[in-house]
Length: 117
Length: 109
Image 1 (cartoon, chains in turn purple, yellow):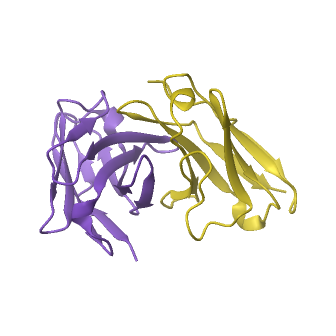
Image 2: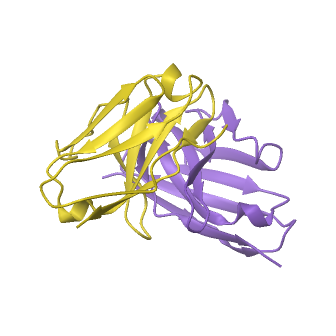
């Protein structure tokens, strides 16, 4: 059974930084692209970033480009999202998702990031 | 990239069929056969229901079906059941980014 468990969310001030982590199990982690998707409170879903199998290819939504870095550790079966210069509008539940041929096949339960003074 | 347009809500009685539309542009829905649909219960993670316009993953009931015509994709739930009451989001590949729909709340009357 695929399991994705996010951690690292919390309350941070505007301009601050945070590292989100996602621990994967139940599938061959190194064989799949992975992605982060977020959902602001009461709002819809927004794709944030994706990374290819070996970490050499990374893609971002324009609103986080230059402020966020997606990375992975295949030995540890872990996905990361480093976020800097956080803004109030980055407040959301951040989901880790296994990406499989143009869709998001499996999702974690998410971790809440709140950016507020 | 603007969000795909979905109706805010749809409703139906048990056993009826409901259809949710997802309207985009030729740069996303109309340009690729990579539309997927996700079901989300309040406070829970999304779940993949349909991929590649009309493919149903293992374990998803066959009362869920997808289609596409031009820049509009659709999700149909046939034989509506109480457990189908949830939010539904469409998603389309758009070159490199992905764009999600605005979301539709399905209410079972």
